[in-house]
Image (cartoon, rainbow, N blue to C red):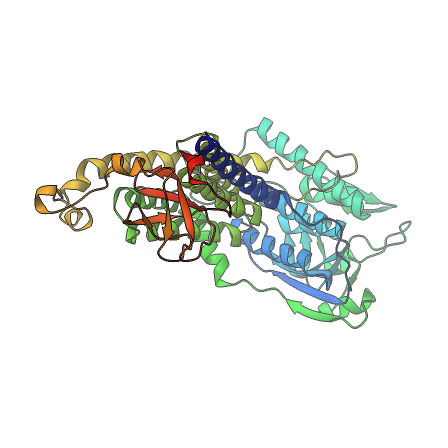
Length: 502
């Protein structure tokens, strides 16, 4: 009876430890720092934007904005801009990051250093102030559709009006939020809008607004402030002086080779996932831990690394994948069978990988009179699910091929034992029946148990393990559980009576 209670007590403790570990890991996942960061405000981060605004530029800017948010010394960001424009969806995400940075107490200024055309002009409207270099220009932000082979593709009138109306509302809302003239932003997007201030026509109907530096800083009565740009400055140092930033410390954010690697990794994401899954499958089918397992783990680690550098995967996503693997290990070694813990582990791994392909979208307040919702999150989700489906399909095909042809490959014989170890040849296996009779028997440890070691039980030298406890040599122990070749013992407390376990 006591042995029965001991076994159930041991099972209860083991399950409790496993589930406490699960709860602890999920608590780690949910932990995040709260509150705004105190900023000294004297460090000025310069982020060059010197090319077309596309996904590659987004990876680069996303990392720059994240570093600025994490660095408490950064109080000002200057976007050094020279761009012909780019993708509207990417532009919307960059604007979300800029507005999110503002909520952290960081001022963002745009310095038009040659040109801010199309998407670049829209980004300028999202910053706290616009400064321009001599001879620079800004404007012409009408949305266009690029043909797959290059060149401009005509859009149907209904689709064109839908995109134009949405973009027009976006630029008007940005202009209102930052104190610019809303009609100026709308005239950059829509050539049907005429802009007139007092008696002066700034932009005639039928033309897209495009301003030189001199025109952008002009004060037209009855307005008392410049038309669009705050001032013309020779360089960023002069910009900082005009903003009254004392003792500025300049740092320039540069694109690293890691961004280029991240772009490549995101392009081949399904391929990396497939190699990772196949490597793990082959490792499960071969003894020990060898090359397939190492390659599989490296592929998944490279996948997570690339998406982290690209600003897609967060630390929470990587932690979720790790939790998934821990849950699977817990299910295999601590909770025999396959139940809730193993299922949660598989879901955590798949969920973490999918989430690693979806970026963190900054939470920003609504624009004046505009409901600005980042619908581009749906595009990331669709792509992540598509990548996962492709990877699972290719993995399934690969497993079928490996299961069918792997045993016939020449190197397979070097990995898997092909001969039978019979008793006739002198091999002795585990006697399960004899081992089961050891439950309740007492003996003495021959070595320290850390937690495995050797004990003398029934005058036989037997390999045993404890339940994680350290047991010194020459301690009296009792066998409490036998699971195949695994014999579990525990230390006998003082006053132990062997008759109680019979």
